[in-house]
Length: 243
Length: 52
Image (cartoon, rainbow over all chains, first blue to last red; front, side, top):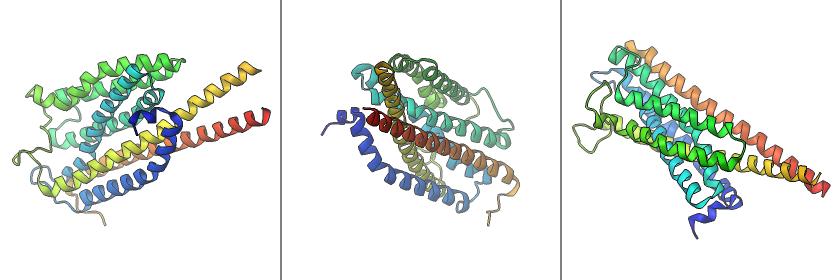
């Protein structure tokens, strides 16, 4: 068995439909458990008070915003190199999920920043690179919608994805590249002094896995929809030709 | 029912509300479009089979 078998739309649909119920249920459960645990059963932080509970949404959403872009990059490269339509459609399907994750990260960050930093927004390296990533997501989705020929759209969005990857990398490592700005370093670290306390990190891990599975479930479902939408176009074109 | 969020209750609750609304919108729109496209494809395939 090879991964390239899933380049066949029928095989992809068949397998994803079998896997999706497990993904929906496990992601829903993990997100619910992680968020309820984080919201109801974690203590206040000694400096940030109860605002620390925002971490259970902010960090997983930010993580998925960046990872969604990397997934789109891999799928786009597969399209460019091997011309598998399913991978181009998977990249297209992931973008709206990625943009929602970016929006959640930006919104929760602004709401959290107001009482902690005294401002909703600062032109800090991490915040700014995240805003640019959001704009890249918008551009990517708009480009797919703007071009009629799906193969041309896949080619051009793949190039845009490659360029946007610079900002996806910056979003993750901006704090390390420029030691300035308001945003703190990574919340989770192998260094015990840097890492958040276990009381927060354990529910945070659960939320991160939940968000990750949610992303996979959404991408599988949305890719299925894109495959069907493409088939509709092909069938309609055939019908017009025969008429 | 709600934990005591102190003076930051508005901040925490608005962050949760905004995020859950965005996630719910994403799921609802995704399922709505998915079902619509599936129905459309099945109808088209049926029509093409019928018309030969």
